[in-house]
Image (cartoon, rainbow, N blue to C red; front, top):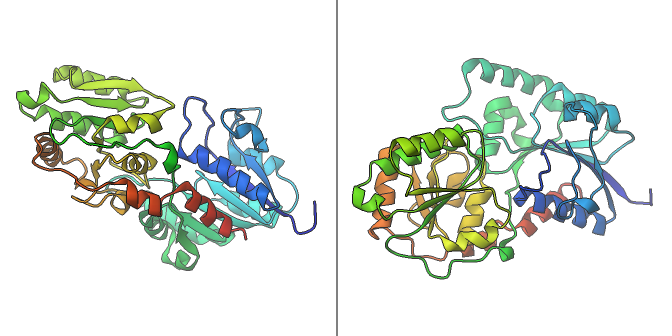
Length: 358
């Protein structure tokens, strides 16, 4: 290893899927490039290998067998490292102490995990607090992807971690996202971008639409982008309410950056969220967002400024917002792209993570 070269590892429990290339993939590619340009040797530990996009340029180490990534890393990782990042791993487990012993590295754990609406059950909260006291000493720095997330880290594992917990916001490649140059004031088109599972609350959206007048339902169009295990349940509910002309399932697509601009508002009725990249992408396309008051949503969406916030699971409130927006009684007038350009670019995200190893 050349003089002054730093060596880092990224341990990321994030499956690489050619059909799903999103914001985190672009971040990984950009961060790898930034490290190499600055004489930083970087190794990536993923559950699988892939050649889509720029992954062919990454030094990826992954298991051949179907074993837990943490187990594989402890079996495989060798030598000393300056810094080890973890993404999408459970925080404050014995893994971190074993990793610290093997690598002698500064360990930075990034928390991407949303919390359930209403919080964890008492038993789980107690377990997390115990893990915080036992294993947090082996993590040198905690990073939350939103202020909400950092608050939840302290709530889960103990306020004693405050001095080593900070925020690095997720970012997006804004220039690749085509903007909507003129939104429809009345009869706007809506989209949903979401993994299809119960916690994303799309069933609430269906219930809210069912409360609308027949005159609105006859003209309302909502396209849903995404796939997931809850799709059949959602389609069953849509059929039950005879809303097939309203909802259109578009599946997973790789060119959402070109499609947001075809819509006027995005709907995200989620029950749990850390900090949504799809919200950032929609706002970057000058498409206001109608979403819930959970997670870090309100750190990006300001009520009646660049979107609308409603209480999670409140279908009556959601129905009223959709109705008012559809009829042109409510409208967002600003260009929602501007604030995203200033605060949530992937360039800022890369620079902020690189500062942690400088």
